[in-house]
Image (cartoon, rainbow, N blue to C red; front, side):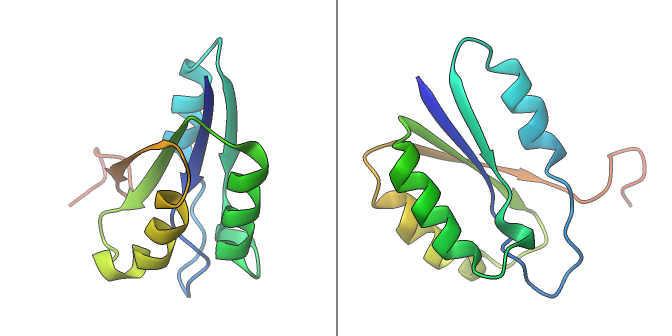
Length: 102
């Protein structure tokens, strides 16, 4: 199965955060063809997500969403991934490990 994992933080004004959850998930998907895409540091992140998704043609797309971003900030990303012939899922994470979260 082809799995595309995408960091949904798309280069806004916030400092980019390494997608640790996606990396852990990718390492657990042994036996599958997995691509992790972190467009947060790219100048045209949505274009890169669309290009990568179309060329990779995944069966499943997983999105990592930050729990502090407004839902509407993901509208365009949802349009891109929902246009694919793939199962789409999302998970919410946080910036800090739980031990440090307040």
